[in-house]
Image (cartoon, rainbow over all chains, first blue to last red):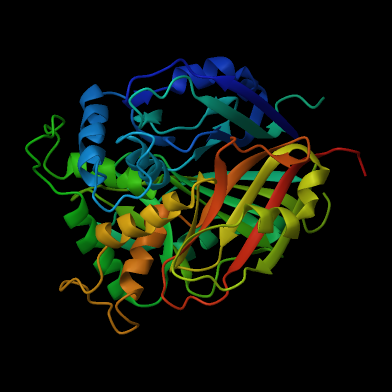
Length: 145
Length: 145
Length: 145
């Protein structure tokens, strides 16, 4: 049984939803050593989040941005936390609606996602900059040490 | 320390929220071997999801369906991803709001849920068909192998 | 590799969002023994939830309460589950939107949260009373037993 953990930064993304599965797989090649286990991807921020959704048609990700901008509006008159910009408080709420981590089974050295599933970085700020992920894999390794 | 993992299909459910705790416990009897650990239930789809909520009164599950149909409406004029049916794009959004996995503590061979907690399959499509779960348990086993 | 698990009760909180990171760290000192691993915090209730968000400005937590009260309203005419009080059905929905657990990386004996991240107890009932958490940590311990 082993634990692997790595911290790395994503490139800066524009506000919206972005597929990052290939980056996670490339940056965290330790996945290949695990026969059966789990991958935990954690984002160390409160105005960006992670979710799993459709990896094919990019209009799904565009519709996510449209939906969440309507479900959590900027400049609500009742917001008290407004001094970091009109995109800030909505970003915190969206981040909690979607969540700060995803957990994915690992099977025979690969992420055991469904055919259409991918990991999304959800960037809720206009200028979020580079975001930091802490990725942890645990499980039984393919060849005992 | 051990990892157990199993993939299985649920029966096809109608659109709505359905209690599946007994199915998970029956299909994945390995839970009983774990003294202390965690169960991870993952759904390999992007238009159905998993959550934990009230296991008793079925009207809670009916109200969930009513709420989510109002919070994420079909046929929004701004949706671009619309060629898979009017229930498709809302299904993707609902799936990310609720999440693709649940994690539950295991204690003395049993799921350590609260008295009123159960695992819900959230079927967001009109005809979602059979859904596939990947279930992973990890922990210290009752009797060392 | 080790698993630690502990069940404890939080103090009773008023309806709203409350920072509980210091309580979790104090009640579950086993975190310090783990060199690399994960912490899983699970709430055994269906009308309160857990999320990770901003740990500094308390108005973020006030705005969360304002937002969720508007996004999931009381006394909706379509609710069928209404006999436990007008705050009950919204509490169930909020609990599933936010989730019943959070998972956080552990690194060198500490929760590896971002600078601005904290664990929120989300109390959705008017009189929720004391809530029970089941906290599980897994990972490689600093000094082998």
